[in-house]
Structure formats: C-alpha cells, structure tokens
Image 1 (cartoon, helix red, strand yellow):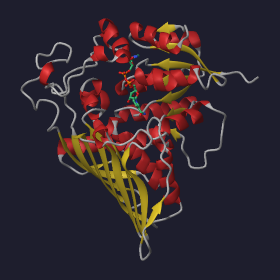
Image 2: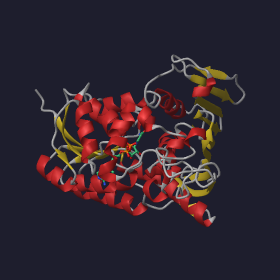
Image 3: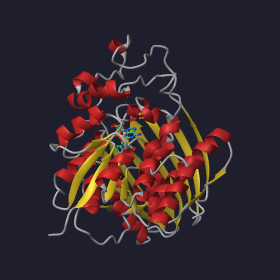
Image 4: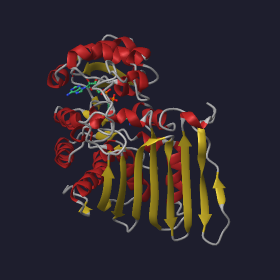
Length: 412
Ligand SMILES: NC(=O)c1ccc[n+]([C@@H]2O[C@H](COP(=O)([O-])OP(=O)(O)OC[C@H]3O[C@@H](n4cnc5c(N)ncnc54)[C@H](O)[C@@H]3O)[C@@H](O)[C@H]2O)c1
C-alpha cells in the first residue's frame, strides 16, 4: 500500500479545522495523515483535537513543529499577514505547502515566497476554491470555447450582506495591515478568477474606496459585543454564548491570546473600506470594471463578458431575506449568452450546493484524492496567488494616492 502523505495544520481556527482537518481525518484518511498542529493558542489546539477526534503533537512554535515532525506538506490557515512565514519556513525545511488565500498581503512577501519556491524546488498550492465551483468552471469552458469572441471588457460586481459581510469588521480582517482590506482578503478570489478566466495578467489599476457603513459611523458603539451597553438595540450584536461552536473555539480560548471574535463593527480602529470600485487593464487588452460592497441585503455576484462576438452574463444571488428554499437558495442564478446577431440562449447549469458553490468539496478532492488530470488548470500555484493579490495591492495604493498604479512586476 502506498504510504500516506503526512500533513501539519498551521492555524487551528474554524477554516483550518472545518475545511482541511476534517477532510484529512475523514474522507481522505486513506491518502493523507494529519501528524501535528501548530497555533499560538494552545486552548484552541485542544478544541481542534477534540473536534477532529485524534490526539496529535501540538506546537506553539513552528520551527519546533516542523523540525520534530518533518511533514510532507504544511497547510497554512493562519491570519493572512502571517501566511508568508509558514509558507517560506515550510519550503525551506523541505515541505510542500497548501495555503489558504490570499497568498500574502504584501509585495515583498510575494517575492520572497516565489524566491523560496524557486530555490527549494518545493511546491506551494493556493487553495482557490472558487475556481472549482462548477458554475465558475462552466464560465471558463465557455470563454475557452470563445463563445463571445475576444473579451473586450468585463463588468464584475460582488455583493456581501450584513451577516457575512459584517464579520470582516469584527476581527483581524478589519486592520488593513493584517488582511490587505477587502481588495486583498476577499477580492483575491475574484481577481484570481479573472486572471484564470481571461488567461491574462493585470497591468494597471485605478481604484476608489471608502468606509461609510461600518467603522466610526455610529456614536453608540462598544469595544466588543460581550459587554456592550447598546447590545439590546444593536442589529449587529453577536452573542457568542448562543453559538456553541464559536464559543468553544474562540470565547473559551480568549485567555490565551485575547483574540476577541465579537469586536464592535463600529469600532473607530477599523481601517478597511466597506465599498470599493476598481478599474483594471489587462495584458491582452481587456478592461475590467469591478465593485465590492459589504453592507447589502443579499450576497452574490453579477458578471458580464463583452466580446467581439457577443455578451455572456452570469448571476448568482442568495440571502436570508429572499425567502428561497434550501434546495434552491438562489434568488437569481444562471448564465445567458447573447450572441451578436443571434438569439439569446440560456445555458443550463445545475445548482450545486455545499461550501463556496461546491468549490470546497472539489478542491479537497484535487488536493487529497487520487491524482487526476487537470485540463482546465484548476490547481493554482504561488505565482497565480501572487498575481491575484497584486491587483488588490495596486488598488490599495491607487485609493491612497489617487493615481493610476502599474501592477508591480514580480521580477521572477
Ligand atoms: N477560501 C476561503 O473561502 C476561506 C474561507 C475562510 C477563511 N479563509 C482563510 O483561512 C485563513 C484562516 O481563517 P479563519 O477564519 O479560520 O481565521 P481564524 O482567526 O479563525 O483562525 C486563525 C488561527 O490562526 C492562529 N494564529 C494566529 N496567528 C498565528 C501565528 N502567528 N502562528 C500560529 N497560529 C496563529 C489563531 O490562533 C487561529 O487559531 C485566513 O487566511 C482566511 O483568509 C479562506
């Protein structure tokens, strides 16, 4: 029997446990073995062990962890601004890496990661689950078949609601230096999809963005929900004690690191934007108009590819207030092709449920299942990870300076 690949999980928060830990100890345990955990919070690591149902060596120091366990692959699910330390440390110690998005939040860290990859010959895979959603894969197929000819422009609008969207203002994501703001933390998914769909690279960026809904927009605010005097009348009040899974993983582990999961979404120290508009010029001549708003009544996206032979429109909208059923949670869902001079065509695309439009399950299969061909190029390497964050980094600079900003060159 082929021996199982040995994995270390760095970062035992919800994403680490629920996406990767559970997959390795569960459906993929015949191919993969979880051999250890690393996190700065020993209490959270204990919860992780309980939830995963195994006792594992647990380290608060990554160098000790990797030296002692010598894993084949390190999975990185720590906060975004720390990814580079684990990615580079793992590769320099002889391990491959699977990292959550974004690859990192800074240009110099992109460069250092690519340099470490080149010098060590190790492989770094970025867990771009959105590529794997069948809906997004279908768009890739249609564009590859040249259904609209040469794509001249793209209109892409992404929507976050006040339930999921508000969560970016409660914890580390709210600090630009920790997450890169939504243009890096969240839009890395969208800019990666565009790079992958168009098979082009971003060249120059102009952006506007500000914060008008969250942050210091409300006089009646606290530090955190737990002891807020306005809790009884705040629609954003998060009662961690009413959510047992979160209470166990975060509230009960606070004494070790003071990581508060319920910080006030109106805190004055929030320095990320909540609404953003970006124009991007691509290497093949395509222009993108992109927007992201995080205070809406629903979630989803609408996108249109305008080409020399027609227009392809795609839309996916869902949300708690829309009254949809569990079998079909979408208020709007579908793909429509408008060929120039031809008849409009609705393109059938089955509804796929599961995390991130069915992308999570398919990504896990690619990462931990039997090796399989990858004709559409779903697997994303460190360069793809870097290219997707460079658009956001340039956009942040454009917001700060008011200038059109060239996308930094990787020089590798
Ligand atoms: N692809 C997706 O759709 C998706 C969804 C959710 C989260 N994510 C990504 O997954 C990562 C984790 O997200 P999360 O929501 O689980 O975050 P989290 O804050 O809940 O968990 C992060 C964990 O890392 C630990 N940690 C913090 N600093 C550390 C350090 N220096 N060394 C070791 N451990 C450290 C924390 O104690 C915590 O247990 C992020 O990069 C996020 O962007 C991706």
